[in-house]
Structures are given as structure tokens and as C-alpha cells.
Length: 493
Ligand code: HEM
Ligand SMILES: *[C@@H]1O[C@H](CO)[C@@H](O)[C@H](O)[C@H]1NC(C)=O
Image (cartoon, rainbow, N blue to C red; front, side, top):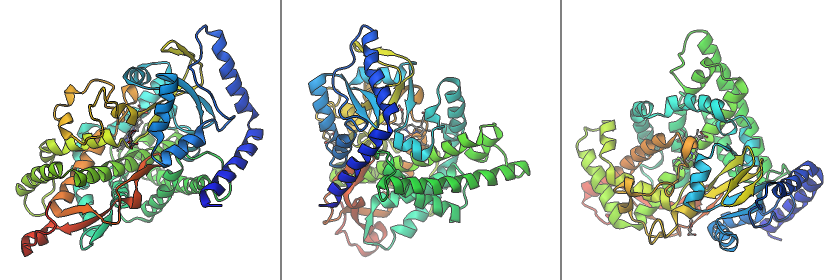
């Protein structure tokens, strides 16, 4: 029996145990189904599948083999734009299309939620678990450090982090695995810019290790079985939480001694604003997940698409070299430089369209709701699939083609059709942070190195649910300096 079937068998056994232990969940499912009869409108078509696991394993398998859209498309073809299924132990309405997105982003009857595995690892008191005024309050505390004017102040430190990273992990090497490299870069940038953590400190190293493990379990079946991925992730999350709790204590002591100010970093700001400790802890855990893995996937796939589209690559190089020529040696990028990276950003948005880092986001019905002629009972999950919208040929003709020109005039894109950062009151507040970080990283990469896919790497990827390239995307690199000095143009594009 191979490792996969062993895992499936273990999962099946676990499910049996969970089934017996989960009669309250079952009752909830049954009452949720029964709820449909009272409203006059039918429940969305579909089926809830097996008790407790529902279609979870089937969807997770499809994600791993990168066929999740096909899987969801088959459902949409069979049942239409609204259908029901059961994921992670909850009945779920799956919505497809722009009007579905609009409903999910703007209906006040919906709250947001995380997957059960995510909640158990990261916490149940994050910004996504609160609604109304409380949501607005917590979100504003984060936004203080993520708004345009805040992000402008990070350009210099991001520039320094990127250079340091390339000196330490790219310079002098012939091949680089891009995804692991970008994960460690984005983790460092986040620790410096948002949490004011000491570089090379022990806490930062420990957190980086724990979070590498933790993110592997975000959409796992949340059963804490020995030797399962989820149990390893849960253990990593416990250690990570202890380290974060230590940081909170240290910041509180500094604040009380008058050695820091609320403007210094997010943790101190939250402490000064009286957010309870458990909420600070959960939100810091949340930010650490939200802020680094997504951006790492974004930069990685941008490099992947530039490699595969040499015209676009040449245009990006031209734009970035033009900017580099205007700088003195070692001079950091400025805000003004970033606004001149128009084509690079269009290529980046086209990458977000083709490979959105977030697969899907869950909403939760706070009351009974009605959509598309169907009744969705209170307590149900609602989900959309970002990639399905982005690959809809009615919105983006010839959707598989990489074409940055689609984004040369972003206002021409119809609403609710380009949704890599979600939308509405829950629109990702980190989008400016991610944009600036990506542009700074790409600037230094394209002006210092030429790259091409390594011959042993096929460039494919799977989803966990974050897109992860096979072999972490292995590329061959060559420093540009040596091309100029030696007149060796063999690696030119
Ligand atoms: C390319 C990078 C990123 C992508 C693709 C991304 C995507 C998303 C998506 C799809 C959502 C959910 C929106 C919804 O529910 O409709 C979200 C929420 C969120 N993101 Fe991001 N994100 C990225 C980077 C970041 C960064 C860098 C940060 C922080 C520094 C961040 C912080 C957050 C927070 C706090 C929320 C929750 C907002 C709320 O519920 O009010 N994200 N992100
Ligand atoms: C998006 O959907 C297309 C079409 O089904 C598929 O080929 C592609 O791999 C998917 N991309 C991601 C990032 O899931």
C-alpha cells in the first residue's frame, strides 16, 4: 500500500471515529436540511455526501492534483450557479459567477469564517471571526499599518531586505528554488515592517520554522490523528503561539515602561487600544499566515510566467533597467520609482488572474438568506472559487493566455470579475503591502539576474490550497554583472 492509500485509510478510520463522536454535528446537518422546508424556497440542488466528511476528501484530492476547478465546474454544470455540498463538516452553498461574487461581497447577512483546520491552528478570534462594529475596529487597527501612507514608509526597509536576501541566497549560485526563497523573504519583510522584530533574532527564526509547517495544514481534514499532517501542524501552531505570546509580553513591558509608542508596530498598537490578549494573539497568528505565503506564491508565479513569456519578460527588464539607470550605486528604490513600474504591475495582475494565491474564501450565513431563488439556512457556509471567475472566457477571452495588456487599463475590467483580493468590506487590506513588496522584489531580481526554468523542472504546480510549484520552481540563474563584464551573452533572453 503506498503512502497515499495509507493516509486515506487512516483518514477513513478517523472519519469513523469522528462520526461517532460527532452526533451534534450530524444533528446540525440534519436540522440545517430540515430548515429548508420552512421557508417556502427549496434548498440549492446537490447533495451533502457522506456524513461529516461530505465531499471534503474528494475536493482535497482534486486540489492536490490541480483539478479542483474541473471538479467544481462539473458541479456547476450539473446543478447550476448555486449548489449545495458539505465541506469540513458544514453544509455549504457553492456560488459561481459575477453575481454570486457580488452577493458574497456585499450581503450584510453574511459573516466570514475560516476553515475548521485553520481555526484550530490560528484561533477563533481573528479579524475574520468578528462582524459589524467589532470587525471594523479590529480591521482599522491593522489598516493603520497597511494603508498607502504606512506602506510608503516601508519601501526603504523592504528594499534592504530584498538586497540582503539576494546577496545571501542567490548571489554565487547557479540554481535557486524560488518558492522557498520567496517564503523566507516575505516572512522577513513582514517581521521587520509590521512587527518590528529584530533581524536574526531567535524568536523570528523559531516562528519562521513553525509557520512553514503550519501553513501545510490550512485545509487539512481537521482530525488530530497521530502522525498525520494535521497533528504535526497543530503541534507547530502550539509552539508558534507560545513564541507570539512571548512577543506580546515583551511589547507590553516596553509600553508600560514608556519605551515604545503605539505607532511603533501592530502589537503595541493593539495593546495600547485595549484589544484583549487572546484577540491580539489570534490576530497576530492570522496576519503571519495571511501576509507571507500569499505574497510568496504571487512573486514566484510572476517569475514563472515571465520565463514562459519572453516578450513580457523583455518589457519588464526594459522598464526596470530604465529605473535602475536613474539610481546611484546602492541607492534604495523610492515611492516615485514604484509608480513608474506600470508594465511590471500589469504583468503581476495578469499573474494574479491566472494563478490567484487564494483558492476560495468562506462566508457564513448569520441569518437565513435567499439567493438565486434558493433558501440558504442560517449557519451554512457559502463559498466561491476565485480561479473559476478568472478563467471565465465570457469575462477574459482566451483565459489561458498570459496577456498583461488586459490590465493596461484596469478600469476596463468589469466589477466582481477580477477578485484575487476578495471584495466588499472584507477586501484584503494587505493588497498595497503585497503590491509594493512584489515590485521591489521583482526590480532587484530582474536587474541583477537572468533566469530560466531548470531543465529538470516541468513548471507544473499543485494546490495545498496555496499553489505550490513542483520542486519549488527550480530556475537557473546568472548574474547580469558578469554578462556585461565578460561579454558573455549566452544566458541573455
Ligand atoms: C498577493 C497577496 C495576497 C492575496 C492574494 C490576498 C488575498 C486575500 C483574500 C482573497 C482575502 C479575503 C477577502 C474576502 O474574504 O473576500 C484576504 C483577506 C485578508 N488579508 Fe490578504 N492577501 C494577500 C496579502 C496580504 C497581506 C500582505 C496582508 C497583511 C500584511 C494581508 C492581510 C489580510 C487580512 C487582515 C485579511 C482579512 C480582512 C477582513 O476580513 O476584513 N493579505 N486576503
Ligand atoms: C485555474 O483553472 C484552470 C482551468 O480549469 C486550470 O487550468 C488552472 O490550473 C487553475 N489554476 C489554479 C491556480 O488553480
